[in-house]
Amino acid sequence: MIDASWHEHDDMDALADAVADVVGAIVEGSVEARGAAVIALPGGATPRPVFALLAEARMPWDKVIIIPTDERLVEAGDSRSNVALLEASFPSTGARFLPLAYAEGDHHAAGRAADSRLQSLQWPLDLVWLGMGGDGHTASIFPGPDLEQALTADVQRAIGVLPDPLPPEAPVARVTLTRAAILAARAILVTITGEAKRTVLKRALADGPRSQFPIGRVLAGAAPPIAIHWCPA
Ligand code: 6PG
Image (tube, rainbow, N blue to C red; front, side):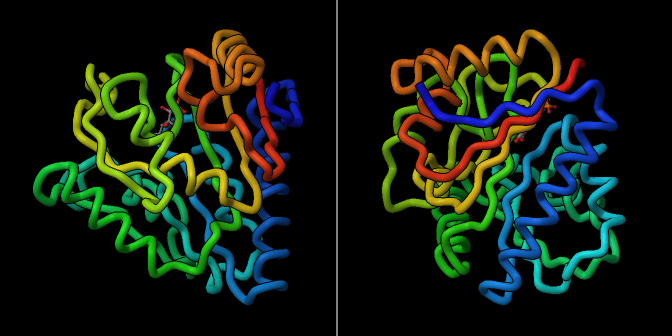
């Protein structure tokens, strides 16, 4: 059983308020303690209302570095790019953004490039904020051929993956933070909506390393505090 704190909210407005407060406190604490905050934020649709609220918050944004938890291997400016979504979500805040990778050669080469970029970052990350798909994937750690590598890589902070089947929402190769990079973080936050995902996540946390869902295997053995925020879809 993976130890996590569940926070259930009546609606997305309440979830967004709560999560924006949590992220703001983590950033303030990191900047106070270390002079900077390096945070990894998810792609997908769920976090967008939170991003909108967070972008209006008074924070030491000029000391914040934002990276995506994973990136689709597309050209810069492609609407499927996670770093482009993050840049558009936090305009004129003064935060800096570190792209993980673009469509640069095959996904193995992109993974090596992303890992190299992350190796130069202040580490560990102060926050890894994750979403989860209905299949229990998180970041771009999907069931399938790359799962074991994403779970067992201990030196790499990021790897390239080619999910099979390709995810319908963005059927492209990707790079993703590895389990090691996620579990090294000082804090882990998960945001999901709807009954179906709540059932999947509760099952994944209960089964941990034996879970059929990637997120259960990713979070198994986590030492950092894990906060889960949920609201109805
Ligand atoms: C991505 C995300 C991915 C996302 C989940 C949930 O690149 O798509 O990092 O892991 O968080 O697929 O997406 P939704 O919030 O849209 O359901």
